[in-house]
Length: 103
Image 1 (tube, rainbow, N blue to C red):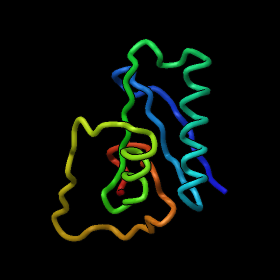
Image 2: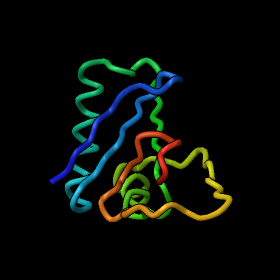
Image 3: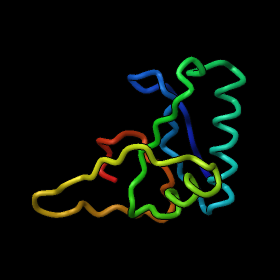
Image 4: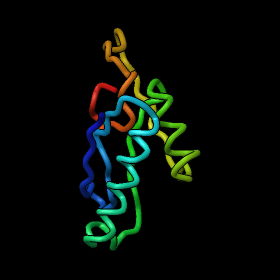
């Protein structure tokens, strides 16, 4: 079982997220279908870019993006917290929906 969506970001790139799934196989199927549908309908196809926000604590998402979907990491933005890292259960999170999300 899982859930996912895709939409344009402010640069026109395709931005999937959030993507939640019970396991890697479900997340893989969701992401592949999202990109396939996105391209078929011509949405965000003009830029050809993809923006994915994923946390290093959601390590299964990082591996899926790099190894299965064959995406290259181009940029990284590290989060800093002044007091504590907010608790979040990362076990089913594969892609965040925004860099401002607490993941």
